[in-house]
Length: 144
Length: 85
Image (cartoon, rainbow over the protein chains, first blue to last red):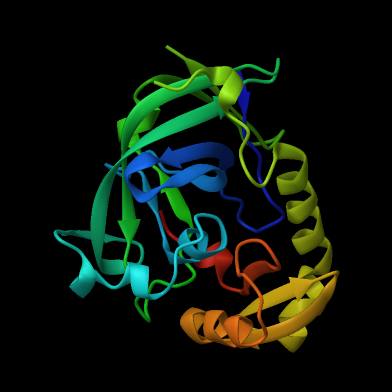
């Protein structure tokens, strides 16, 4: 069982902290706060977390310097993303780490998307049963 | 594939929880002083702020600080509740 949380915002958004390792970018395990977003097709890390958690620079988030990119459309408007293979570590309440291989979309740093949170999308959520309780403000992921 | 025993993320789970508690406890104060701005905190004090994240990072670098390891950065906004996902 992997417990998330609702930070003190109104209305609340459900978060879960997930460890991420991106070998091809030489990024070792970092803990990223993701909004659980069942409507997002892919898991994405946006600029604020790319800088403060992954240690990337604004120049690293300039799509003109990427070998390839894709365009995504979401809450931050149209954003270019670079795709990288990633390992994810989900922390069970009993102390175990559950590892899942996948990809991550790293968003560009643009003026219109700087404050957007990172999103845990369906590519990873499909591996879990998701239980939310609005009144108790709890959210739990259980591995399928 | 990494062994689960080797997952030791930075920040750690306890530090991440401490970060959350800090930002939640300071939000009401910071929203009045730094609305819609990115702020960098070091040892509990705001040392830089900017509405542009890149500009904040460059200011921190000019101070010789690493945005990942030397400060805590957060976006202080009153609009989080209007985020439609």
